[in-house]
Amino acid sequence: MKKYFIGELEFKTKKESENYTRNIINKLGCCIINKDHIYFNFFDNLILNHPECDDKKGIGIDYFYIQPNPVDRRYYQTMIKRLDGHEIDFSWVYCCQFKKRTIRYDLLRAMRESINYYTNEYKLKQSKIICNFCKIENAPYENYHVDHDNPSFQTLSDNFLQLTKNIPSSFGDCKKYNLTIFKDEDKDFKNDWVDYHNKNCNFQILCRDCNLRKKKI
Image (cartoon, rainbow, N blue to C red; front, side, top):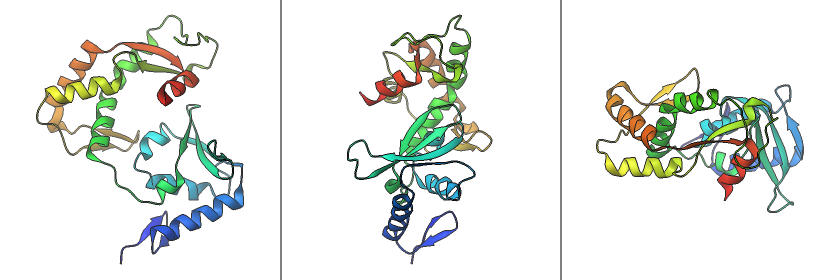
């Protein structure tokens, strides 16, 4: 019989893990779960079961917090405050479904990682950091994000994948920075993608809040 784990906690069924987690969240209610909290390790292990865990965690977790669900305030929503100041929700129910990451998800993560140098370089070269939408210019540096503006990253990646062959189906992991990366044998694909991206991309600077709103549109 298959078993399911949240850290070292063992469950016989997915439903059992879901009920266990729901009871903890209902008991805690709205609160901040920092690294000194008795349940921090539980939530830190729980997020590892999310198929988009790496994207949710970003550069690292400052703390978790629970808030009312904005759709139905009778229920709770679990959130992450990251070390870069970014706040993002994650579905605790999804974490209890133990879904595997798809090949396409890892492919897009590796494609994003391979252009990180150029997005960081764009931000560093700005003589003045200001949000292109709301024009705020006094926010902390880490609250400004580099965004793909017409075409979007999704459009760029979709177009490139339609034009190329021999698309990688397995990937490496950078344990130090918690990143999905291309393997050495796929360096030609990686280089072709980076060249295509840099010839066709348009960057803009957005503050954290405007970037989040844009993603939800």
